[in-house]
Amino acid sequence: MPSLQFPLRDTPAEAPALRAELRAFLAEAGRDWPPMVPAYSWMGFDREFSREVGKRGWIGMTWPMAYGGGERTALERYVVLEEMLAVGAPVGAHWIGDRQSGPLILRLGTEEQRREFLPRIIRGEMAFAIGLSEPDSGSDLASLRTKAEKVPGGWKVNGRKVWTSSAHRCDFMIALLRTAPAPDPKAKHQGLSQFLVDLRSSGLTIRPILDLVGQDGFNEITFDDVFVPDSMLVGQEGNGWEQATAELAFERAGPERYLSSLPLLTEALDDLRAEPAAPEAVGRLLARAATLRQMSLSVAGMLQEGHTPAREAALVKDAGNDFEQALPETIRRLVDPARTPPQVIEMLGLMTMVARSYSLRGGTREILRGIIARQLGLR
Image (cartoon, rainbow, N blue to C red):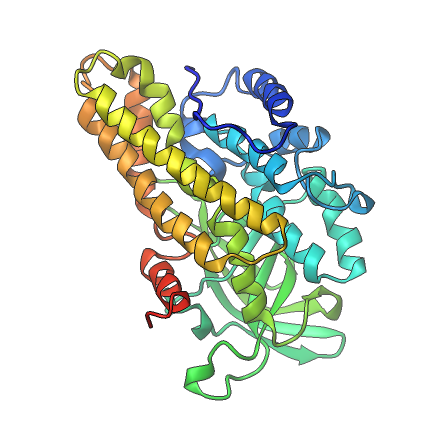
């Protein structure tokens, strides 16, 4: 596979050595990956690969050593994410735990929760799903109706979650549930709490939902009197909305918000050299990618300093989604199917369809622009 690198210097002094180590590991690990593995990018799910990544200390890199973390910088972690995404490594089995579930537990979980979950995430042994979306709620997350009712020793949960990525393969989910009625229709975000839910719980049913390309990455989860112990409440009861929206800053500004389509460009690069219109088009794509990289790195720096950059993260995701969706379409216009290898055409077909979802997952474009406008005082 051709090498494709961005013309920007790394901030951490350790970055060159770390990149070299990562590239050697990924070259060996990806030796037998068919083209369709990189095509799925960070949605690819491979527990064995995640355990190997964990052995090398590349999960929970910034977390305290007391829980098995590396106490490294957020920018060093960024280097790892970038290299994994650049080759489309199947990181899905540890991605959510490392990106947001683990940081949430570290920040707001009990000491018991930290010691129970963080070391297993770090070793690549525990996969997490995100329990936010529900049927009929659309992008109005605060209107969720899955209810957690207090019972002796814990909570009884009834309702449904939907579009939960890889839930049928995961071990736990951090779910946003209604623990108290909203005081009025304008305060729907009140009365919500977050819980750690064992996806093997009695009364919990997971039904895969086939997507446009016939894959079962999405799921519907039904709760039928599912018992969740008191010890699985994350943070404060009733504070779930603030916790969940802060958590989304981790989800929206990483390099996965502009690099998901990059493996296609990497795979097609040699074949594009013969196309007269390719140099200018590819140059424009790389210029956009370089700009997005700088924006994303800036958010990583803000996170390292302890900020919650909701507006900045929304900007990166919105602009990054535009780029990720434009890249397959640009490649489609440039390649000549008669001269292009089958693996490039196969990747192009898949990513053209999958890219449609990029502006939905993690918050729709309309919601993100509303967040940006609100924080700029425009609404």
